[in-house]
Length: 175
Image 1 (cartoon, rainbow, N blue to C red):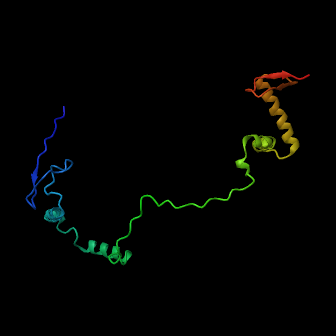
Image 2 (tube, one colour; image 1 turned 90 degrees about the horizontal axis):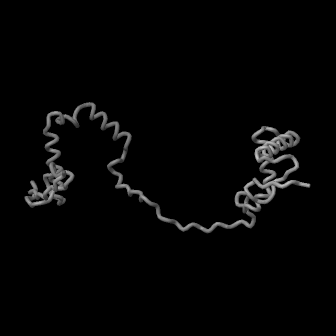
Image 3 (spheres, helix red, strand yellow; image 1 turned 60 degrees about the vertical axis):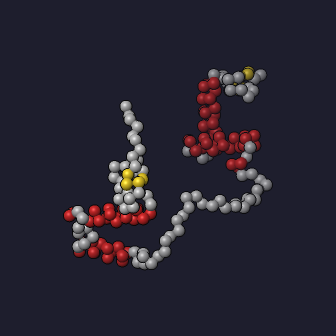
């Protein structure tokens, strides 16, 4: 069972004022959030970090000098550049000019009933693509064979036509 943690104010090491520490860092926070105290906190943390023996020569030595010289060579004028303006997370919405509409629709914009007129060409092209045939005679033979397969699947016998606009199960005998 969790217990509610009580709110404990703490005295800032820099200004001496009482403050409520951030709950996420309550065990480590030593300074309040005023700008002067934040600056003092950073200086205090840097002094504490540099006082440790393993950090004494962190920025010294020939390896670090060489690394710094190479970085400065690859980034000339870094310190002379002004602060870059940050790009916005979202661009401004620009007004888009109206497009000219065409009088004739392209094949992709045809209505379904207009597109039905192209079904014969579509089926012929599909059969040619699937079978690899390019001659009309070969495509005609393939169409007859596929048509016969379709009739067998639908249970139609030769001489029967599909009737109506239903689901394809209605058949009628031609006379």
